[in-house]
Length: 549
Ligand code: TRP
Ligand code: SF4
Image (tube, rainbow, N blue to C red):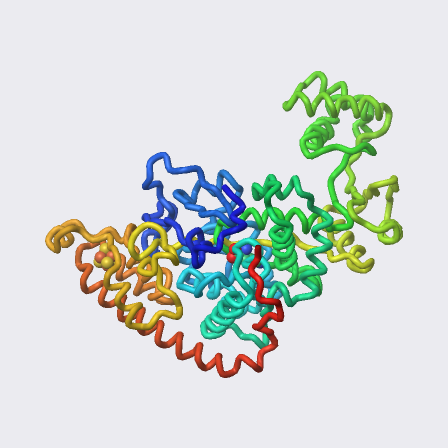
């Protein structure tokens, strides 16, 4: 992969990677009566390893690989916890998530939560961006604080767009977002370059990350320009911005290509925390694997301790030596630590680690802990607090002492749409995608000439049925044209695979619906265009009209 710093020949290269090969297959994990069943099958034998590259062209041959390879979880698993799930969730278009549970829980309990996403203004907004607009809007309607930002710094530094181009595209994104239902009185819209708080936070977060790390995550090298790196910390700040007025579950709806950013943001959120809370068994430090061994030794104390309610570290060391649980290297290191601690009792406790706390905050935490505690240089052990209580206390002391108390941000991932001409949806191939600014007639025509999953003859189609799972037109129905109407989506699907629906009529219907959608959308855009001045977002930058490089 390249860092793509000088990429301004293509009108909007990012769209290429946003829109890549999701194909449809009947999912084996869903109930039969569910209407639309994509699950990223493995059509291409030995398909490429998934690569997740925010500035490259991620082709995702098999969405399931993302689960194993990157630890993204299947959305299906949290779906039952989501109140009134959006149709994109119900239909598996939103296929994955990281840590969405706290957001779902906040929704159920009417607790504060937020949703934020950002758009690089590199071209016209199109039906792929509409997915993300809809996701933000839906979270707003569920009671969340909603945020949308224009990633102008990123567009300038990573894509080489001029400020004039950026201004024009920025307005178009905002108008479509508003036309689709974003409530600007309740939500927040901003440009990265205009948001002082985001810039300040980016600077703070930058102090927690270094070049080697960006190199490992994004493949940056000695040629990568500094502004591009700054746009990364800016995105980290965007992602945490909703929590500046207090920690809350926050979901970032994005395509899976943005997952590297999510992993870094979650790391940085944790690194900014004043205190870590862990479980411990003795005064010494132990890592997660060592702790598992310590827990095993503690649980077996009846077997070896002279006084079972007061097992000694040295006794636990002997037991571990005899029993040899895996892994060997962790066992060796923990046995050494236990030997050294000797007569010290082995005793479970909840530990606060000083990560990023000021001296005052550390003192304040000591003061606040009730009950039995032991204070060390860099940690405090408590014996009367469980993990959850300790987390709560740590966050409170952090907030009272000037910290942010960030919760790790969550994310949800949607599938990329297939191009209307088959293959990728790409903005450099106008016929492959539908811009939200396309004339309704053009939209109609593009759908009419789209590739389908139909058979070569009407007769064969009646006999075998169409391949809805491989049909970009069916995708349009599922992702957009059916809206909230699951029954309609299911009807199209069933009729297609049952051979009752023929492609000519099916495309005609889709084309009409598309033209209607575009007409309605553009009317709403115009209404908003007249009101844009009243909104609290400055769409024109005051920058000199230079190019990025
Ligand atoms: N990097 C994103 C893109 O390529 C844009 C972006 C900037 C963003 N800041 C963000 C996305 C914060 C989600 C959250 O389009
Ligand atoms: Fe696609 Fe419709 Fe043809 Fe089925 S009938 S293959 S959904 S165009």
